[in-house]
Amino acid sequence: MRAFKTLFFALYTIGEMQDTLIEPYENNLTVTMGYMLFGVFHVANITIMINMLIAMMTESYQNIIVLA
Image 1 (tube, helix red, strand yellow):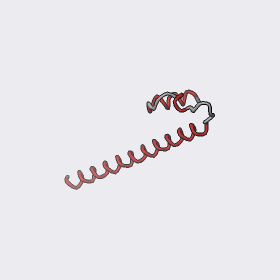
Image 2 (cartoon, rainbow, N blue to C red):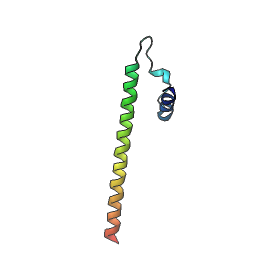
Image 3 (cartoon, rainbow, N blue to C red):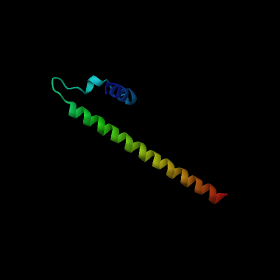
């Protein structure tokens, strides 16, 4: 799990892993929810961007077919 957290913070450059800890409280639920929300956001964002790319390519292809 530690390797995943290190990779997660390195990929998105959002600071150090220790920045998410609130001393002296155990905030494992908060940190886990933050990871999950951030991950869901990125998955949704990538899905939308791929969808937009497919739509743009389809439109360009149809324009080329019409003008050919």
